[in-house]
Length: 303
Image (cartoon, rainbow, N blue to C red; front, side, top):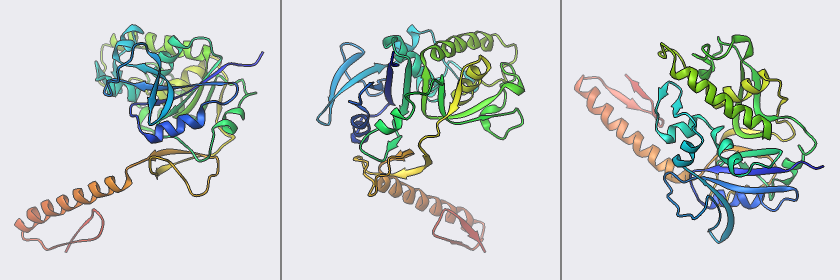
């Protein structure tokens, strides 16, 4: 029997770029596709969480989540060192939570692929990427899977000795990830269990709530799940700027992350910020009687 697989793009914004990626992912034989929307700030009206909406002339199967659903699943409001954090902070820090939301409403799949909203397929379809893993039975497919240790310079590794032993630590990167059905259940239960422990720590000053890129591979590897790196297609990890239609001149069918838009707008903001910085520094340093010059970047040369 063939595996049933659900693919989804997680997003908190709706623009042409996100719709374009959905179109590339939708209508691939053997895969179901949804757009998973954080509706906290968008406030799009819906009758049911699973519904069809039209964006930019395209009909899209959507799944809406928000803080209300979060409460239904009893998931903790915790980030790196803070209890009762804002929902937006919680969702950024705990990217695995979206799997638990999705599985509650789409429970009967063997595998679930999550792609972040700023992942770009430089081609017409995700089909070649997805089908390359059709015969792979790994419970976790992820980018950057590696062994970690408590002395690592990776920021998220520090302060987790309350829940993990040094020789059990794994790291990863989360823009693209596939989890099996049973792996999602294990991770969900781990989050609930760790929350109880964390909330009852006598001293949380140096205790860090495990980041998703640490927790997911560490929990699964320590519990005997099959974990593998995504290797079939190279994923270029550098910031790229594209217009909302997301067109490269030379399609290569590779994945890119993070892809950011509004390049000219952001460049203008950077220049304005640079001008303000120069003005402030001129006033401050001239008051001190120091001669200064500026180069073309954000650096000040004191002469």
